[in-house]
Image (cartoon, rainbow, N blue to C red; front, side, top):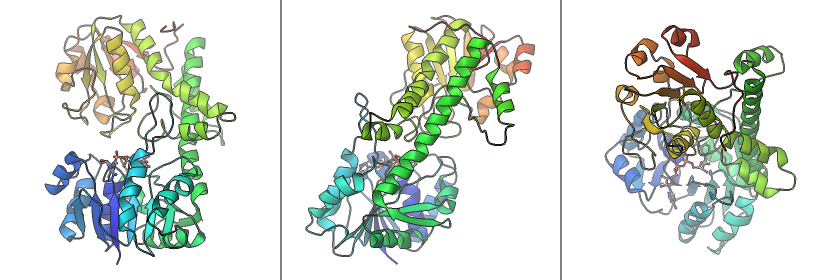
Length: 428
Ligand SMILES: NC(=O)c1ccc[n+]([C@@H]2O[C@H](COP(=O)([O-])OP(=O)(O)OC[C@H]3O[C@@H](n4cnc5c(N)ncnc54)[C@H](O)[C@@H]3O)[C@@H](O)[C@H]2O)c1
């Protein structure tokens, strides 16, 4: 049994802290956020993630998860704090990692293990974290162990994947990788693969970049299909009959804390050679404006419009970097009277560009409905019910989740991203 201090109790740190506690470790969970503190002290999970409430309750009842605002001495420290990008320069903002590391410095003892779980630009553990920790007088790799253990869970399946996914432990030295592997073996059932810290950092960022570039390709296919009057969804289905082809799904863009962010870590690491990655970022970032183009064709402003979905993907409550949110912002800028609806998002959530309403109120008297997120509630929308509420029967499906024939039978004009056979004007 080890005493562990987990810094950052968000989507990654909270379930990880619970898993360690349930594996028998004594866990000090640290987060300065009053919202996180209030929820956990009341025994509630501070995030909406399947089964997380049960896991948090079990961990708290085990008596081995203690929640506090400041780190305390421990055998191992796990850092799972945010690593966003600067909105203007797209450079990694490592200030959270640096602050967490500085908080740990006075607590370090020989033999301690420090693990960075946050996704970071390659080289960060060695060139940023190690020098800060060395301020303790203890040398990482010699007196204390230091490793990067990236997290690759999928929101919506975090609990299952935390346990089952293969893990990388990237050590500053092979012994550091070994120490980290032994710690994670207490709950990880997948393979634990040892490597060095910088290779682990690169591998993690490559994984998200791979997704981003492939989504961008699917989105570019959708834009091309619209211009040549072909249904991209049918074409993708046909292409994917090829045994070595798997075109991903087009949509209004990509979001979340990872895929829209991490590729910039590679672009900035080697701008002169990262042309493909940079282009993929701009294709995906351009998709919300394209959705607005489709909406303009369907129903010009200022008519009231219902935008269904605010989160960055289905069945999560996370709106970080959400393309749907960006569509809503652009629609408001274009002068639409925007009504938002998302059953996974709390109405008091800061930063929403329009009121978040229950479904029936969002739909009432609107001149167009746009499905931006494929939450089950929206996939299963009854067109007859919607027809009874709206002023104009027009629907834009940016996810290809509606039964087009059923909606048309109910009198709707239907526009589908990638299948609208439009000569699309630019939004400029
Ligand atoms: N969310 C995901 O699906 C996912 C998947 C893989 C990797 N990651 C990476 O994991 C890291 C964390 O992401 P997240 O989604 O859990 O973020 P999050 O924003 O949900 O949680 C981070 C938490 O850290 C807290 N925090 C900030 N500074 C702190 C400090 N100095 N000490 C202690 N706590 C502090 C914040 O209050 C917040 O609650 C990021 O680098 C992210 O890229 C996330």
